[in-house]
Length: 132
Image (cartoon, rainbow, N blue to C red; front, side):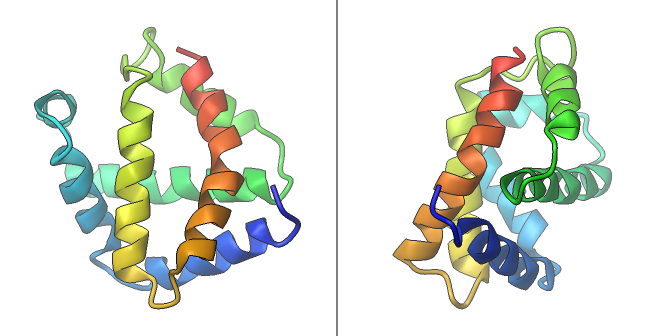
């Protein structure tokens, strides 16, 4: 990860959080990836889920900025086969949907911003995924 990546990502996320439709658009994009993903959310209160997503992304961003991985470990456990049973291969779809939604909502999104996001949050995503 490059030194400025966490700051670039934090600022980008702040711009996106100012748009009410960011989290709705994320789930529209994510669920369009596959029927299996749609099934995971079939009986989900999406309003609550969007709130959880907002916090989860923030935890990834804060971890990239140096905070401990305690919350990410808890997310990993809740998403593991002992919890929601989120299949590890869905995390690449999740990241892809996030990047597509960021590009749509962040007016300053560019290839460098995309690369900074990938570098910054991939280690946290791996921690969550590896808890499976």
